[in-house]
Image (cartoon, rainbow, N blue to C red; front, top):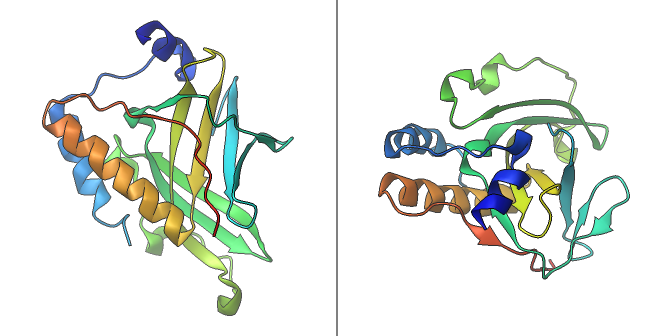
Length: 179
């Protein structure tokens, strides 16, 4: 299994993080809650359809496929929405909190239509490697309130386990939900 983990991670390497690194990451979680490369597909979730999809082809993810989340790739950032589509994105890895960008430092793309949810929204994300295929990895980012809350809960669990010196690489599959 550890061989599959290292082959599935970006550029073939996963980080071993110290409890101190998780302590720094914990500071970065306080305002979260309420890029890819070769072999990385972008994943998204449709609440209307109750399905996860990957890549431009919007292929469904096999519910039996097991993934691991790499804590070193936990992302925070911002998406800017205008005209019902994202027009800008700023992100950084939580292990690098000094790269964080404050909302007030983001470029202004106004005018925004606030009744349509336009403007800058908090975004979080993570890389997930497949245990079935060393060449398959997913990057998932979200700026929906429910998605940010769900990943915030996962991040808090990962950080808490890492700080305590416990195993912190979660394994998961793509169970389906419907709103």
